[in-house]
Length: 152
Image (cartoon, rainbow, N blue to C red; front, side, top):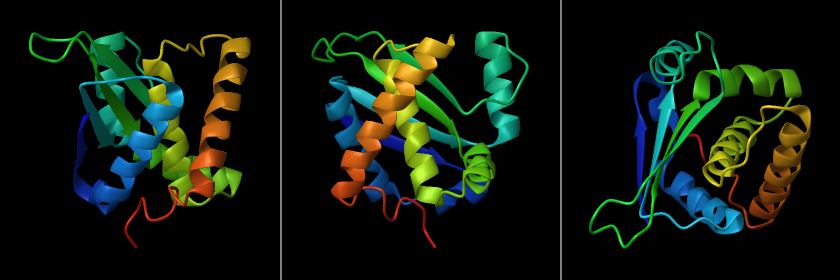
């Protein structure tokens, strides 16, 4: 799986190699095989624009995920693209009293969970996703994969 991480502005604080290790772990834990994976770290303003254009929603959100069909020559595997609102992650982690890396990891896990087809449109789906994502993060933490996702 090829992994691309794009971060602009202040989001350049993301540590690319540790995030790639986490993405590999999470996609394996989720049981999803992808040809390409793209993670784009965005601000509140940027995610509102993406949300408005692609989903016709006019509000800030945490994650937007797209599972893209396989292209010729892609080994029959789909690709995944996740937009993570790193600004919102920082705001939310303060309310939860979580470390920045853990909140960012949760958002990445949440996006990958969506790539599997999981839906959080209702409370039952939300709770099911959150249980699964937190379980993945516990395993990732035991392997030391939640450290160093954001540069000091």
